[in-house]
Length: 536
Image 1 (cartoon, rainbow, N blue to C red):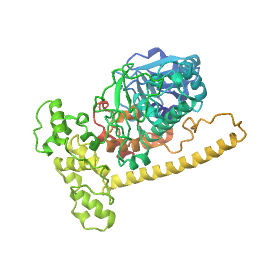
Image 2 (tube, rainbow, N blue to C red):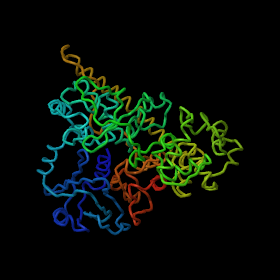
Image 3 (cartoon, rainbow, N blue to C red):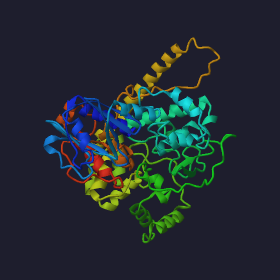
Image 4 (cartoon, rainbow, N blue to C red):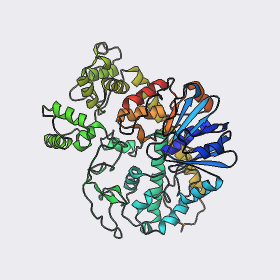
């Protein structure tokens, strides 16, 4: 979904304008010379591939890899290119820098060749699930392999594979040629649904909100990926190697059929602190393997235990200490509904404010900037939020989460309103689609099988798409890094310049681009909140 979000933003910023092109590191010198002075007509995405079309029949193919970026700047504030900048575009107002694993020049035939080789992408309007069904049904490979094969399902990665098959109730080892059309339709439906959700929200969120609430785990974001227990049935999750990638399954929710071979080398998953899909701190405290060193030491010190030693020793020490703990079934909420067991002054004030906005407790509450680091970490831990980072990071993270903070209240309210609007629009769209489908199939022969709901492909019908600022704030509060949403989405123009270009990405008034780009391993909470703050 990330490349499609980048494509949407760049279409607004680049299309319809002529650009002077150069290759700062010399690795795209001939290509830059060929498109220099040409007008960019449009950009298209297929799965993880981006194509920029220029006058003269030129097509630039881009694959970002794991850390690519296409950044946009005001011309007067653009930084110097980095050693990885392969393409620089500029006009009288804007400068862009492209760094990517693949940047190749070709013609329309290059796009046609790539389009033919790539599979069906649920985020494209021209996706053809019927063609995918015919191709898939003739393969003896496992459905788990084919979901990761970009020649079949374009755009699906390892996290989505685990979650799509879980929601479809299909075991990853099941041979594709044994899958019924009904099973395939469920797989396609969840592929489209989850990728479209990622496109709208800017994060990989696979758990349905209603189910998360029913399961009394409202902050749960994924069912089985990097989990030891199934998020739905709490049964054992198994993992094994599939083409050098870790595959996951809950065999209670994804039972093996008679024609599904047994899993060789299946074991309890080796949990890790994912940089792409971080769980809430509350969930990670129940699986110490997912905690970083600072979090492990803080948890041990809170229990009066030694925090010295290697990570493996700290994990074992905390696991032994928590073995007899009874964890609450529901995560703490901020507000009047639920208060934490050990109510802090800040939580008490929030509850009092919810009941009585004129409460004197509000005046007495400690503001985050006045708190000590230990107090900040305790507050964040009580809310299930990350506790890593410097004091200013912790302050900003807590301010963003607290209803008493004007910043957090305004942004969270805006996001909630947007989500409510999106839900209403989605419900209305479903009703319209259902009516159209009923009308279309009214005269269908009774012998023709019904294969379940077939979602509308593409992104044009999705309505409001969460901005990069809103997505960054939500991920910061959840403890996820920006690389959950493709790092290539970066717009550092001023608001006026961005509005002229029609972009919908983050538009901070002050650029921070002179600093080195944040690596994927660094926590993104502080920067994300700052970007969100400046964009308002």
